[in-house]
Amino acid sequence: MQNNNFIVGVGFALLATAFWSGNFVVSRGLAESIHPINLAFYRWLAATLLFTPFAIKSVIREWCIIKKQLPYLFLTALLGVSTFNSLIYFAGRSTTAVNMSLIMLTFPIFILLISILFFKERLGLKKVLGIAVVLSGVLSIVSKGQPTKLLDLSLNAGDPLMLMAAFIFAIHSHLIKNKDKKMSIFTLQYSTFFVGLIILLPFHLWVSNHTQEITFTLPVLGSILYVAVCASLISFLSWNKAIDKIGAVSAGMIYYLLPLFSGFVAFILLGEKLHFYHLISGLLIISGILIINRKQKKA
Image 1 (cartoon, rainbow, N blue to C red):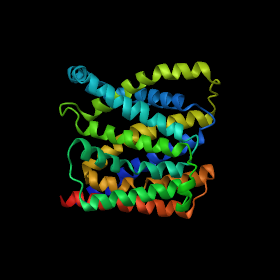
Image 2: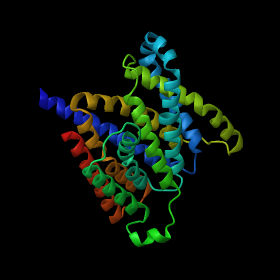
Image 3: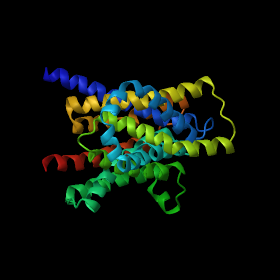
Image 4: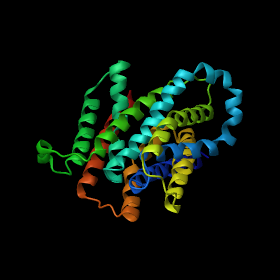
């Protein structure tokens, strides 16, 4: 029975990670077809509408909690729904899907740094080593595997945007961790989807009035449906199931396969080239995070 739970949990974690990796490929593939704000808006509009039948009973039952937690829900939605995903779609205009997925792996480092600065967590030698290894992996990406270029560096514009997205996701993760225990995960997710959509609405309207009208071709509609259903609803639910079956640590280890999925799909669909420095960067980032997680597990 325990083996079955492990296999099922790994399967759910792999499914969520694979679908999340496609979000980077979509953001890159639609860079010229739809404005990032519009893509984010339509993603969460579709996700919210599709999620409503499943979450409405939970929302009605917990309405009193929602009203008390409105400031918390607003901040969580602003960071995790509106800002985080919009930054990903802006980054997709000027960097590769592989770079995006590799840089996104740095968010556990930002979680650790926030814990040290604001929650007085101790910074041990292994954590320092882990951070150094992860940073060397990031520098390998931005220098394209040639450290001497760091002195005369011209970044992809999307790379710092992805670092900013990873930092914001780290703050969002701390907020999720400290949610009201009386609020169910369904209510939390639906509430942040809905509030994040409302936050995006005025920006969506402004962009729609000042940019070229969107042509809803089959690839554009299919991509929006993919990020709404697969990269939003199914991924979130699968990830929660994975954590329930195998725990957050084991599920987190599978998440580090994200660049592998993104790189393969980007190579097949977008024709992006994979370089040796991508492999080295990925190994450095994953190694650094494993060093930190090993220390945390012992503690």
